[in-house]
Image 1 (tube, rainbow, N blue to C red):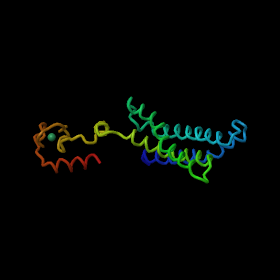
Image 2: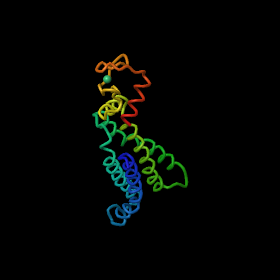
Image 3: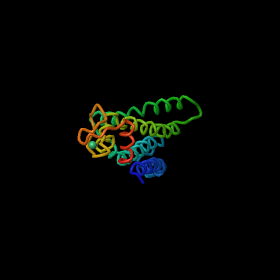
Image 4: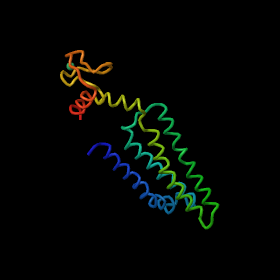
Length: 181
Ligand SMILES: [Zn+2]
C-alpha cells in the first residue's frame, strides 16, 4: 500500500476517533465534576476533541508537508479562520428556535473540523515549483539519452551530445516512460 493511501486511512481514523470521543469526553468533564455547567462543558469538549483532531491530523500528515515559514503561519491561522464559518452558523442557530445553545455548541465543533481539515489541504498542498523539485529529486522528469543514459536536460535539440544519437521528441518522451515507470 502506498504511504499516501495509508495516511488517508489514518486521517479518516483520526476524524472518527475525535468524533467518537466527543460523548465520553463530555461525560468525563461534566459528570466528573470538572465543569458542572452543561453549555460550558460542551465548549470545553469542543476544545479537547478539536485538540485531539489537530494533533492526530498533524502527526499523520507532517512528513508529507514542506514546512516553510509561510506554511507554519498559515497553518496556525487556519485554526482561527475555520472558526469563522462555524461561528456564523452557531450564531444563526442561536437566533432560530427551537435550537438550543447546547446543540449550537456541538454543531460549532462539527462545522469547524471539516473547515479546518479543508484549510490544511489548501495550505499544505505543494506548489508547482515544489512539485518540480520533488520530481527532480526522485529522478522523475529528468531526461536521459535512451541509448547511453547521458542527461539531456537543458538541451535545445533532441540530439545526444555524448553519443550523437538523434531522436524525435515523441521517441525521447516515450523512451523515458519505458525506463522510468
Ligand atoms: Zn547518448
